[in-house]
Image (cartoon, rainbow over all chains, first blue to last red):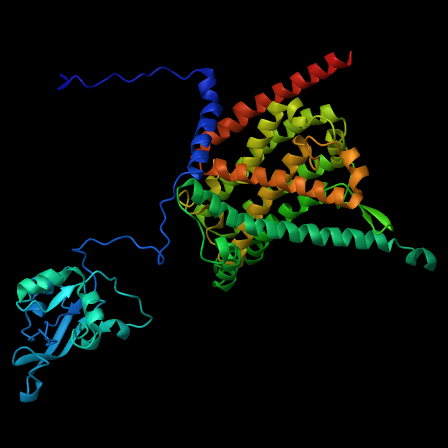
Length: 185
Length: 354
C-alpha cells in the first residue's frame, strides 16, 4: 500500500546489546527521573483552604430568585417540574391574599416548593424552562448529609435572601448574574 | 543442688529480656511509620502531597490505619481450614521478627558500671546461616495463607509467591558464600568488627551486593517482584480472603521484612553501625561508651532509612515482572552470576594470599 504522506519513518529494530539487556542503566535513568519529580511543583490544592475557580456557567445548587423589591418571582406554573428529566421538583400553588403584595410578584405563588437533591442531575433544564427567571443554578456544591430526608430541599433552603433585609447575602447569592438581573427587569 | 538452681544469672536474663522487648517494639513502630513513609514517598514522586490531614504532616495516619483495621469485621470463610487460616499470618510475622535477633544494633553500652551490654540479642557463631534459615521460613506464611483460603486464585498466587521466594534464596545464599569467603566468619559481630574503621564490604564485593539487593527485593515481595500480592493480578493474591487484623499482620510482616532486610544489607555490606569517615576507636575514647553506642545505633538507623527509601524509590519506578521473566531472571541470570562472583572472589583471594 502506498504511504499517503512522507512523514512515516522506519522504526529501528536492532536487537538489544548485552549492556542494554542488563537493563540496570535504564533502571537507574528511570530512578533519576522519579527522583527529580520529588522536587517539582505539586498538583494538589489544599481544599477547603484553597479552591479551584468555577466557571460562570457551572451548574450547582438551585436558588429561587427574588426581584429588586424583594418579591418572590416564582408563580408555581410548573414548567420546571415538567422540564425536569429526573422528576425531582414538586410544588403546590396558593393564591396571593390582598395584604401580601410586597411578598409575591403575581397572584399565584408557590406555597410549597421542593427539590429532591438525590434525584436532581443538575442538568439546568429547569433554569432554561422558567419564564419568570425564578430559578437558577449557582456555583456551590450540594453538601452531604447523613439522612435521606436532609437532602430534600424545601423553600426556606432554596430561597435567595431578601435584598431589602439582607443586601450583602443577596448580592453574594446572586453572584455574577447581577447584570443579567437588571436586563430581565 | 538447691544452690545451683538459684545461682542463675538473673542479670543476663533481664538484659536479654529488655533488649528483646526494646528491639521488637522499635521494629513495630518503625514498620508502622514505614507505611506513612511509603505513602508520602509515593506521593512526592507522583507530584502530589500524600496524607496531610491526620496530625501535622499526616503523622497520625498510621494510627488511623491501625484503628481502621481493628474495627473492620473479621471474616473467616466457612469452607476454609480454620486453624491454618489463623496460623498463616502468625507464621509470616514470626519469621519477620525472628531475624532481628542476630543483628548488631550498636556497640557496647556501659550500664552504670555494673555490666557491659552488647546491643545484640544473640551473638551466635552461625549468624548469617541463621538469617538465611529464618528467611526460608518466611515462605511458610505465604503458602499456608494461600492454601487455607480455599480459593483457586489465592492458591495460584501463593504458589507463585512460594516459587519466587525459594528461587531467589539461591543467588542470595551464593552471594553470601562469596562474602563469607572474604570475611572468614559467620558471626555478625565479627563481620561488622572487620568493617569498623576499615573498608566496607561493598567495595570488595560490588557484584555480590547487587545480587543480594535484587534477591532482597524478591524475598520481601516488593515491586518489581510483587506478582503474588498485586491487586490486579490474580485478585490481590494470597491475602485476598483476609480482612481486619490478619490482613494487617500480613501487610505489617511485609514492612517488617523490609526493615530487617535493610538492616541485614547495611550490616553485611555497608559497615553496620560504623560511622563513615570517622575513626570509631578514637571517638570512643573522647566521648565515652554510652554516647558512642547511641551515635552508632543512630548511624545504623540512618543507613536502614536510606535503604528503605531505596526500596520505595524502586517500587514507584519500575513496572512489575511477568512470572516467566521473574523465573528466568532468578535461575538463568542470577544463579550463574552469583556462581561467577564466587569463583572470581575465590581466585582473587588465593592470588592475593600467595
